Image 1 (tube, rainbow, N blue to C red):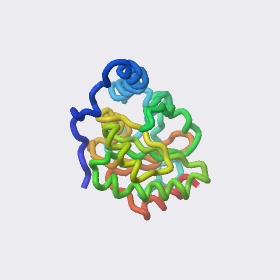
Image 2 (cartoon, one colour):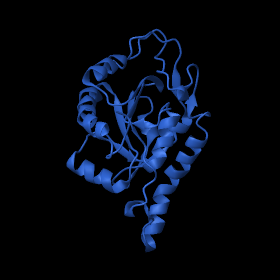
Image 3 (cartoon, one colour):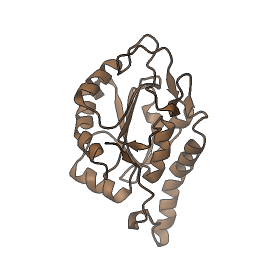
Image 4 (cartoon, one colour):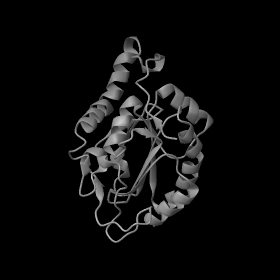
Length: 219
């Protein structure tokens, strides 16, 4: 069952820190907050270079021409990650920033998840195993936590993963919509090839068999 994104948290972790920490936190967040606002407000712009189908339609994206997508169909058009995607810099749980341009030129799996989402939590070990198997082939993976910092840090402290995770809070729902998540649920996963063309996407929990199919797309 897909889990809709919750309203923005009003708990302690979502409040601005007191005294001098407030300025430091604001500085760290400024880059990604501005970038998220630009992306979610202008998803029809350079975030995507689009052909057919429209990524907001909820239809399965196309693979590269002449290649089979994860559903077994042959695709003729592709959806391309645009320069605004690569320009994003997002905060990690350790409060360092991660520039997404570091992934450019490599196959990339993007997984939107949250600690309050049971299927997201269930598929996390599967995704981590998939990353460990595929990273030698050059595939990268990014976990996008549509969640607050405190529960994400707690979860990763008990359930560490090798792939990087970034924090977006409720704004991550807008990012997911820009990536074709018309339903607004979690988990949501997108696979792009080394040129940034989106080859597959999945609303809901992934399976080992499905990931095995995806692996064939990037080999």
